[in-house]
Length: 219
Image 1 (tube, helix red, strand yellow):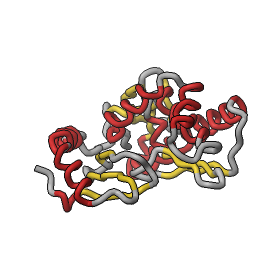
Image 2 (tube, rainbow, N blue to C red):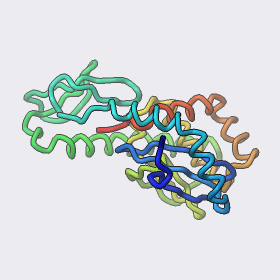
Image 3 (cartoon, rainbow, N blue to C red):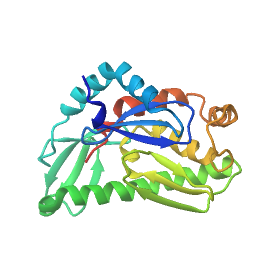
């Protein structure tokens, strides 16, 4: 049984409660701001089996060794790490080529490479969909926040988790559309979800994918 004191409670402007397994195995409950603690505890207890199952699954994700033959995700596809005499990190066929001279700082170099790809791909999608949706934003930044895949501030500053570049393209695109809709709809009302569906009819499938696989997007 999950220990209630081990669950991080995050109060937000939302209508429902939701549970998340964060990178590293931490458990977070995101709840409406005024939700009584009693109901939060009951919600956690009711979903304790789900939490235990997810924690076991998370535990199966082995620690990276950055060795030849390990698999890494890029836009939803697995690539084999190929360490060799290469001049730069790049994808070729079904391999992620990695310079042997960078192995001593492999994690940092791979993160920098993923961040660069995220800025290019997500940036292109944001600009493209902003035009298609006839909206605008004031800034675009990238982070590694464990609790959010994307966010939009009151003054339309967009932020995305660069790890989205590891997810399937449709999932990445959904998060982009979701945050761009927030530039005009500042809550998750029925009108908000209708607008999301107008540009991404299958958005519920992408939400499910993130809930099931989000903790696997690691370097």
